[in-house]
Amino acid sequence: MKRPHSVQRICLVGATGLVGTSLIEACIGRGDVRLVAVSRREVPLPHGARMEVLLAPTEGWGEAIATSNADVFVCALGTTMRNVGGDRSAFRAVDLDLVLASARAAREAGIGHMILVSSVGADAGAKNFYLRTKGEAEAQLRKLGFDRLDILQPSLLVGKRQESRPLEWLAMLFAPVMNLLLHGKARRYRAIRASAIAKAILALVHERSAGKFAREYDSMQYAIKRSGDYAMMRAAG
Image (cartoon, rainbow, N blue to C red; front, side):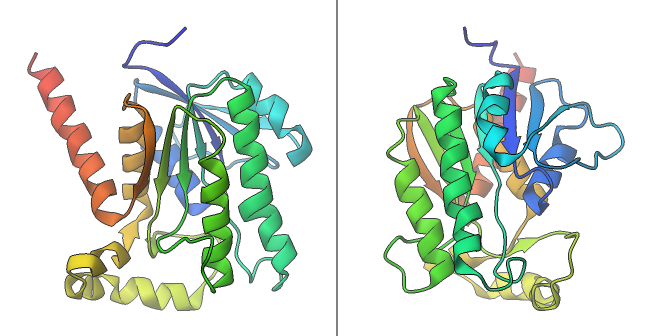
């Protein structure tokens, strides 16, 4: 049975990453969502966070995802070639295999809405290994039969990461200036704050229309604005 529009239960995988931690922070004090994280390890919770954390090895995630009893499945999983020592198989094991296995578990558990954090330029036919892997994941997810699938495709994510990434730090430093130079079709490459991604996720959690949607920079910003407009209309009666 569907819960009231005002309260949605979210199952999150990828809770310890930049987007995952931003989503946890964004949920603090909100009464319209209930967040449940499925993780291999303890998730550091910010002050004020009220959520469930289900700990399980990845092979036990299917049961944990089913236990979450969620309305929406949010996948913010992702690693880097640096973290896996340049091992392409290890990278695909997370960004493709684990993403798909988690999504299948969510679908089998009866969750009809999935939100994936992917990447701008993701394309199963891309020459770039990273973008090709992301594109393959997107293509397979579209076949799983979710009633609604939102694929977020951000460019550079701005936010405080746990690990040091010097090149990304420099890119983030110049991001405000670079964003001003990116217009037209190039706007899709604008850097975006992880906190904005979290706001977009929470906005999309409450949307009902069925379909498959790829959302780049402007579409994510519009989802946030649309959610704010809707909230104001509700407050006004």
